[in-house]
Image 1: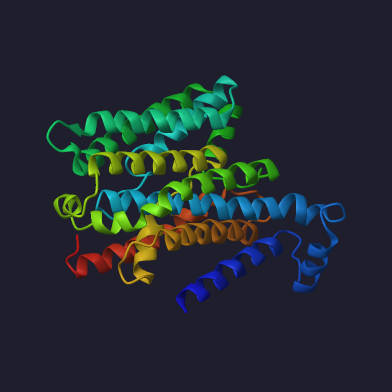
Image 2: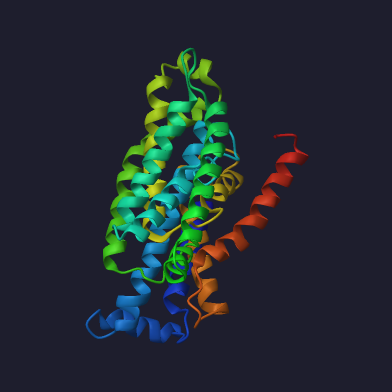
Length: 318
């Protein structure tokens, strides 16, 4: 029942995203535009459709990556945008923009380098990849990347800094079919690697020793899944910038709806819904201003996070 309601809610948000804008489409008009095809209806098929699909795929990728991080590190506060991965991708993307290089290449490189540095600092001879050390070092790497990013923006010209700031805020305004294809491919590859590990993640949450007793090769499994999730998050940041709180909130929100169990598909759906809802908000409240959707993910995600944390504190879970 919950699955059916979730699918219906996500489909409703997607249809609303196709309708919303300075020129609203009624249900009848939307149906006519869908039937018309891309050659006859430019507004829907070349502007709103790729934007809505990109929002779904990017949000799903961030939600999936965040849930994997939180499960592997056994900490609901751990996510790519907290432990330095997203900050590294953002730094690489802005550096590429200012240097005239392809933004996605720079963002992916920045995310990979930040992840590699965090892993190298977190390795322990006795315990291998230590989750607690990874979180602490990740926060430090994230702060360092944010400081370096601020220096780049201060030294850049006004026009370049403004363009970089708009991208950093998380925007779907420039999404086309090429970006949709890249987002869909990135999500598909990430899902093929991460979703089959859902059962292993359930076991890892009981602790390393019980997981070893069940035959899991933790020293190989945890780095592989963390690296895959980091690459997925970096790819999504590379496409549209940072969407604050999406990776952070999606996992706990999915757990709340799924009786506290790890549900990667639900986390991806929550992420897709958050980004789509934020994009709809930009077109309702500022249809002419082209506001970045990332601003609204913060406005939507922050209260949800406070509510989830409050419930955890009252239950003595953190």
